[in-house]
Image: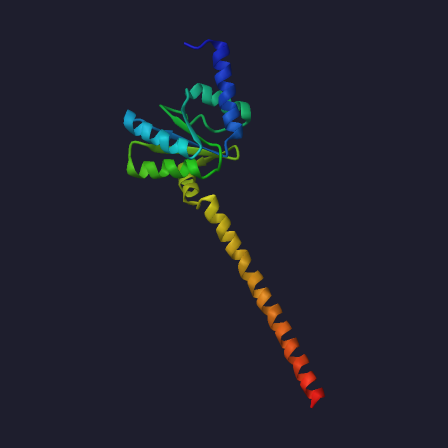
Length: 173
């Protein structure tokens, strides 16, 4: 049994994770066997997501410490918390996909920018394309107008060259 100083240290570590995580997903993992939890942890670890089972009281204290309110109703029964450290989408995406294939994992809620989001919003978050896809979409959107401008400018220059050629031919004649 951890003593008070160890508990305070755990609360501080969890509070630090709440502060540094891009997003957090809270899930009920009851019914998952050891093999399933190990598989899920491996997928999350590969994506840079920390998956922890933390006592609800310590999680509540850590949340209060960093100013996150409204977790009391959510933190009932056994919970696992996924801290997405690299991007806000990866943890939600992996957990939502895993929950689709395994009914024993239930998404309860999430935290995004210190605000509680519902399980439905976590599902919406999971639908956002990965960062690389979003960047390529933005670049494609930016290339269209630029290439159009280049074509317009080339057309104007081409027309100017035709006019100057016609004037030169006219003067030579």
